[in-house]
Length: 221
Image: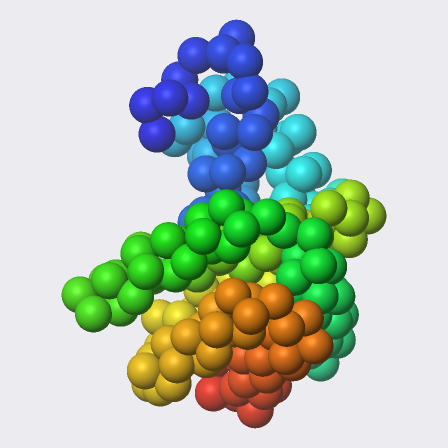
């Protein structure tokens, strides 16, 4: 993590938080695992002050739990809690999709279609990492185009808390082709500016991930 080596570098706390977040999401740091400040500070070549601030950010996002006795520990969220959060996220994306269909310009829709084609290319290459990244870009872009700041902020907060599950689902999804077909349907509805349909397609698409998680099909390794 070379870019985190300068103590006075602007955005240092955010860089450390991003590094830790990515490692939690990708299961390098697993639920229940302690995050020892001294070890991490040495590893990242930063002082403990920006590290502590970064851990506070992750705690606010629900990815880390900080206690006086154990320090920072990777959060272990129950399937029931995750399912509740996922339901709210799906409602937010449905609402955002309806607003986007009404408010987005033709260029905005074309940009989403371009991202979709990039994602489809990653699917054909069997490149799960880029597929996942582009998938998240599309979902986030649909929400951003809604123009509703409150909705965008709420979605961003929940997305960070659910990012790990979405990542694991993508890595272990045995019905990848079905997920791709669902995204095709989302794009068709967006191009038609059919807000009700695109919202329904998004709810269906997101819901399958949470059902799999709640049923234990996505294991927390």
